[in-house]
Image 1 (tube, helix red, strand yellow):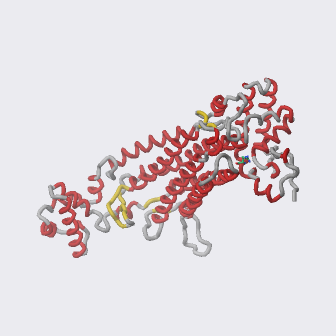
Image 2 (cartoon, rainbow, N blue to C red):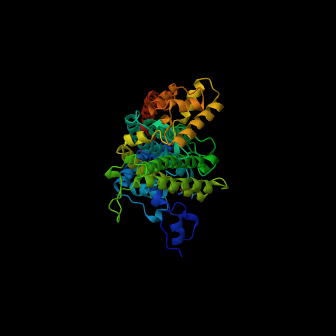
Image 3 (cartoon, helix red, strand yellow):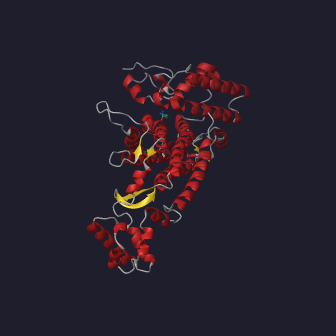
Length: 477
Ligand code: ARG
């Protein structure tokens, strides 16, 4: 039964035998939690310093410990030190590595006053806080690509949709820029999440704190946290920050999927508004003519797994007794996967968006289709003093008449307009052009090119601020 008798385990003493292979295989997390190794080592160095501060390590022992941990980091990065399946997790592996490097006399002192329970949550917070910034950099790159395309198309009208039916003409720059704002909110969410996650659980120990005279506040500051979690039981049990992180990554996924869906539509033969660059599309193994929007489709598809991760962590947490339970080990693979998925997806979407070529003539030609200027007639009539209720009827009558005549709204004659309602003088034609329609919607958030240009200037500044936020990693490893 019991073939795993490795002494890497941190808890062997009370057991007559080691775990069975099946138990060890189930228990092991080192094959995925190894990404935490640099954070665990940084944390160990900070912990060694507070042990020294509490007179639990001499000056020389501290020096030996810090040098040993630096060597261990080097060896872990270079691959000279490799965790083995018998190590169970990153914390056990690194303790084994430290003892192999500096011996058990000093190496065996590091574990005092901490538990893997507070250690793992501290490492994970550090890993996620740094990675939120690294993801934000990739999101900002996509925003910049969207911004460049939006700036190039401010003056190009296109049909705007509701219910996937032509609704009103819009500036295509306005259409593209809406995605920039969605991603900006996602990065705001990361920045807000970060405030709650910037607290170190160290000092919580297994759950109740420690009787050793350690200084969790100094340790937190040393590690790049803003403070310490207030309650040690909460400190080792809380994974809200994982759930929130996964919500933000799933929402980024949803926003990517909506952008992806638009790219699929725009590049379809039916729309034919945009062409994909060869570098960002694929062909078909059987149909030589095909050029497929695979990046956009994968964005749509991968949002599914990102959403699944939120459901998974919430289900793990629901009804979980306090304090630490091994269920919590299930918190890591989902965040690692979410981060890796977005690092694959975001640069590809950026490349795909940056190289899209738009057929602005085609968009312009179809902008007024489907009587998309009917609202312009209604609002023009309102400006002549007619109540909107009536104006809506009048514009509807214009659509009915145009349909009957087989023409567009501007194809109605002056006499036909006048017969519908006396307020419809020939001056109504000023809003019956796509350009006039766009220019009339000049509210601060509207589609008039003058408004859109101001919106894009604000968005550009916002992207610069977000880039600044993401440039500085709180935890140096
Ligand atoms: N590998 C564990 C995790 O990720 C570390 C904490 C283990 N603690 C324990 N008491 N078994 O959650």
